[in-house]
Length: 161
Image (cartoon, rainbow, N blue to C red; front, side, top):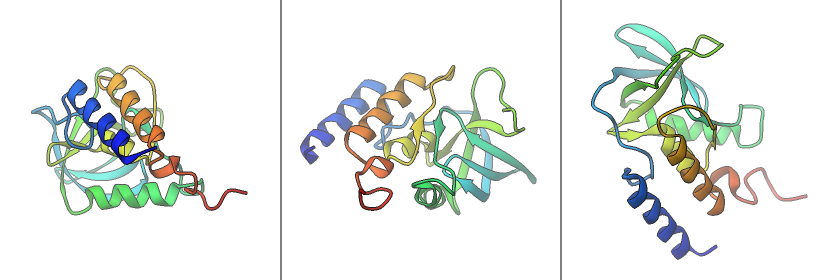
């Protein structure tokens, strides 16, 4: 797939969904301020929110676990994106706590949606569900897969057998 096609496809997504450069929706005005404490994997972390450490799960995406193909790369990419940065946590509609007690959230850095950026870089897959960016995330994830970015690269988990 040519770089020109990828650039055109990315520009189309940005125009359609009104997003930031990564293709991720930009931040709504309200959310809790926080700082990263620890990253478990490419879609879950601990965040200090007003002196209380919350376990946070990114809404709408699923990244590989540390013992799975591309798990370390997905975790490292999330660390590089959010470490030592001011975070804004915005909860979705409905139940904001998952079955493991984690706060389900969109996380923003400099008004960029980290959930969508993670998808755009090929570090996670889209989870279909009832959340506000469901359609945008599906499109972003499809573009990353089509462009063979991140985990979608043919050699993402080493050479082919």
